[in-house]
Every structure is written in C-alpha cells, then in structure tokens.
Amino acid sequence: MLIGEYIHTIDEKNRISLPAKFRKEMGKKVIITPGLDQCLFIFTMAQWAEVAKKLSASENDLSFLSADKRSFNRNMFGQATDAEVDSIGRILIPDFLKDRIKLVGKAALVGVQDRVEVWNDKVWSQYKKAAGEEAEKLAEKLANKIQ
Image 1 (spheres, one colour):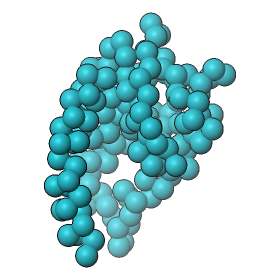
Image 2 (cartoon, helix red, strand yellow; image 1 turned 135 degrees about the vertical axis):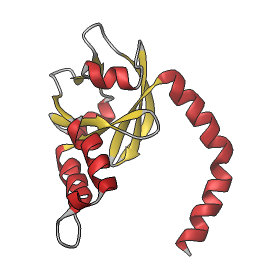
Image 3 (cartoon, helix red, strand yellow; image 1 turned 180 degrees about the vertical axis):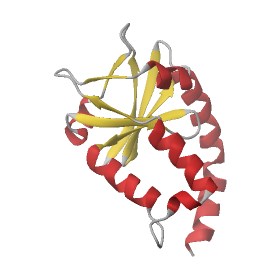
C-alpha cells in the first residue's frame, strides 16, 4: 500500500525522485497520467492495467458509445505516458504534464493506497488544509453511504 506525504525537488531536467518507500512497490516502470483535483497520478504497471480494465469495461464492452466515458478516457489515456525509474529512483515528468499542474521547484508526492499523486506543493498545502477542515463532514457522508 502506498501511503505518506513527501516533498521533493524537481531538477532542471524535470526529474523527480520517488520516495524510497514507494520505489519498492512501484517497480522499474510506471504510468503517469493526469489526475483529478489538480494533480497527476502515478500508477504501477499492474495497477494501470486494472484501472484501464475498469474504465473500458461495460456490459457489452462498448464504452466508447458514452460521450462521458469517451471524454474521460481521452483525458486519462490520451495524456498518459510511461516512465522508467532510473537507478537512483527518479522519473521524468514530461513538460505537458508538469505544465498542467504548474509544477515548479518542489512537488508533494502523496501515497493514496493504489497510486501516488504528484501535486504542486503550494496547491497540495491548500488542498490538505481544506480537506482536513472537512474531514468529519466527509466521514459522516461516507458512513451514510456505506450503511
């Protein structure tokens, strides 16, 4: 399970070091894709296969017939890229993904169970504060849905 928060610097070549705790679980090749809430998602190859299967699944395997599914899949798959983890644990963040979340200088890498999220560190700080203030209300909403 991928958990924890780490702040890392992005070097001049757009490389960022994955935390040592994440490297063991992520392997030598990962998928980077646009995420939600102004972040990027990084998936292991195995988890990406699961996500792809779920996103394309439908009763008749005709998910392309739904406009919403087409749009979401174009965003998720069309801008996804694979990245090699180098010998010292760095990955290259392509410019088009880096620019998408205005990543400059430092990034927050956040483990969220099955994926790592990459955030502009300032945006992450604001998001974390707001989410923390809403945690009890969110827990209550989720509890009501589970029951």
